[in-house]
Image (tube, rainbow, N blue to C red; front, side):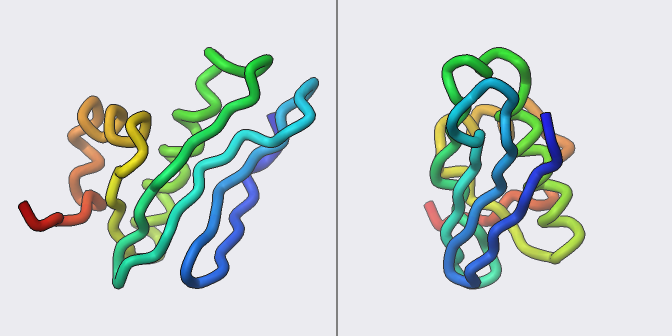
Length: 98
């Protein structure tokens, strides 16, 4: 797996990584909402699934949030599941109204 590339268009963006043997990159996309980023979709090419690539993208977003000072709204089911399993990420979990 190569390095994760960050695309930040202010209102939206993605974390992408090229995957050897796949014709598409793995990605985690987001939309901005104030000081938060809504993690709305993850994709891993079928040939690369089960190798922890989607987890690496979520973990990278968490580190990026800590470095840049934004919070994360885990709208994507995969991202939400990872946040439930990793309580140590609660510092970057956005407060959402009930």
